[in-house]
Image (cartoon, rainbow, N blue to C red; front, top):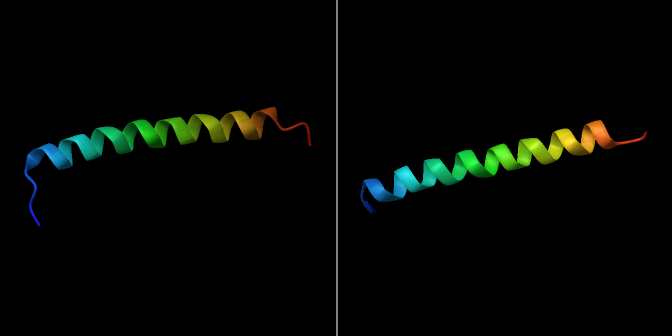
Length: 35
């Protein structure tokens, strides 16, 4: 099931971007929550 180094490299980049975006959204929701 090897697709080559492209998959892992792209996967890591996308994972980093998605995790960063989710972390930013989570912080915004937690800090912006009036409760």
